[in-house]
Structures are given as C-alpha cells and as structure tokens.
Image (cartoon, rainbow, N blue to C red):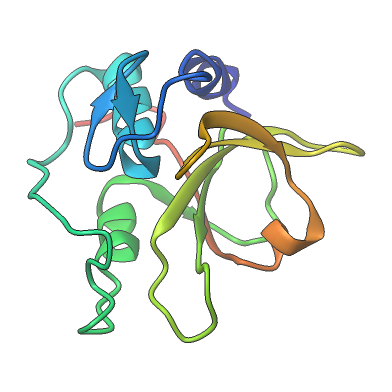
Length: 145
C-alpha cells in the first residue's frame, strides 16, 4: 500500500487534460499524470519521453506503454489490489493498452485517479466496465537505483 502515491495522484485532481503534457494544475494526459507522480516521489523521470500521437503504437500493435511500465515499475498480479497501484487499461478489444490510472481506494467503493480526455484529472469509481479493461497492474518501486 502506497499512501504517498495516492496523495500525489490526488494532488493533480482538477488539472485539465492536455495531450503530451505533465504539469500539475496546467495540463496533463494519463501518462503525464503518472510522470508527474513519479517526479514528486523520486525526482527525475527514469527516461526521456519522446513525442507521441493520440494513436501511438496502435498502427503497429506495439505495446510500448506496457514495456515501459515493465522497465520502471514492479509487476503485480491483477488480483493483488492495493492503493497506489498503477493500472494499465486496454480501452478497446484488440487495441494496444494505452490508458493509465492510479488506484486510490479499495474495498466496497474502489476508485482510481486518471486524466481523461474531456474531463481532466479526476477520481472515478472503479466500476466493472473500468475493471474489465485493466490488463496489467504495477506498483511504484520502493526505491530507485
């Protein structure tokens, strides 16, 4: 359980959705939210972020986001649920996984924080339609090298 991750994510609530951005209060996308939480917890980001389009990785069917998560986060089983987990979503069957969120609450009323186009950063109920889209679950490392 990582209350520091949850607090960092919740600190971004209300930030407008802006593609490819990662500045709390000014704008971010779902990856920008994760990058911002990382910076707040560890300092510098683990690798440079190249420019990406809204359909990035889809034409090639390349799971770039999943591989990046495997490089820098700790993989978990889908049923190992804890606050602070990074959630990777596949938004459509057959497409690459390219939406991210951070588990905020668990139990009877689970929630997650994410940056969602048209809505900005918000804490959403982790309902069955969202849970069905999760393809991977990760934890932030306890420390980085």
